[in-house]
Image (cartoon, rainbow over all chains, first blue to last red; front, side, top):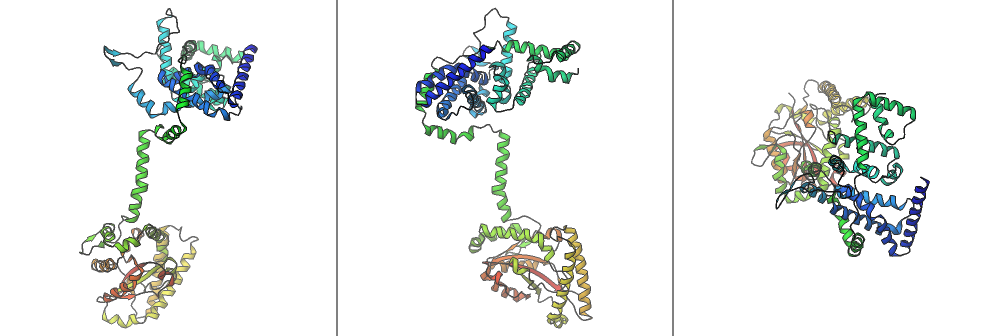
Length: 202
Length: 361
């Protein structure tokens, strides 16, 4: 546990050094920050938006915002918290955008699409899992993912930050600007919502 | 343990944050309640599987793309995007529709209504003598009168609306009791710029009353006394404007009776008073023609709805035509006009409250 904390502190310190470097006009510092966080942010966006294209767009957008505002970063919070906040807000804006909503209407993940050889199922597969895993569990994971996708944006961000990204309640509270108690109750409600959706599955 | 308590503790249990003693109770409840056991089972499998949901990595050229976008996207593009951000917000169609409707009502319909209020005011008559609702009658009148149209610009229209609202509040109070003598030059009329004119048709006046009507001073005397009585009664209510309309009406009726009896005493056996009467259609046709010719219009009066009194009409016309208006009226009616007040003359537009009277029999 202590080790983990030390590791976390080291990472944070590293971030601070990089930010200071960036503020001294060393552009490679930004590159290093992007490389360090790109996977986490991309994954967050992917879980939020459900497809690679939008995730890529939002993750890039988040880092562009970072680039524009990093000069004025005041070290009041950790860089990762700040970055998560930017990414979550960018995703929420995307979900609310007309373009995204229209695309979701036409490209519904559940609905078969007509391809040249008949209906084609768009599948978002996860290649990281070994093939010997039971089909049912895979199915359940997919159902959970879909259920999270269909949550309202606020509840979705809670579930993603806590259950998928593994942030602590305190971190989520800093990212979302809500009190820890509120985070807990909202998360409980979101999970309850998921349970309702997944009744009879798995 | 009840199910509601179980629900409250469930998340803490899953986070392993429960006190050992409560945890034991919790587990006991799970063993006894099938529903709660099911919920717990769901969460157990949920947490097992959600931990196994794979993560997705950023594409290899991610950094390159980010830098490319930073390089190519000018601040101008960003500004434009921000400018049109409102369009990309999620506004439900229903809300947008309701908002548009409200805006339409506020910006289009209300000003139009203010200009042409639709109400059950007295019938206004077109030049051709066809009786139409006043609000309809005024529309062509407004178009026909370029000079008047200029005069009735926005500000003036506002004036008119203020006038009607104020009349609604104070008009009933100010109104002298009907059935007594004329409304000539009340002190209040100087404040709101309203000129009170009373008319009496010449042809309808019985000959025997000629002498009576000449003794104006006596009549005026009775009128002022009447006013005194009325003022007293009004003082009784703390805030006359706020007093309910019915109360005002009551008091008015009271005052009317007071004044009637007063004037009767005063008149003795031969005095006969003028009485407020409703405009006849012929009179309205005639007056409307005069007013229209003089670039004016007849205003609707809101308080007539409640008072049911059609003996008053409000007229608006350019001030320079006011004298001519009186002259033309004088041909057919005996006109009783107030002494010219300064505040009224300073205005560009004359607003005249015309009372129709007949001889009380």
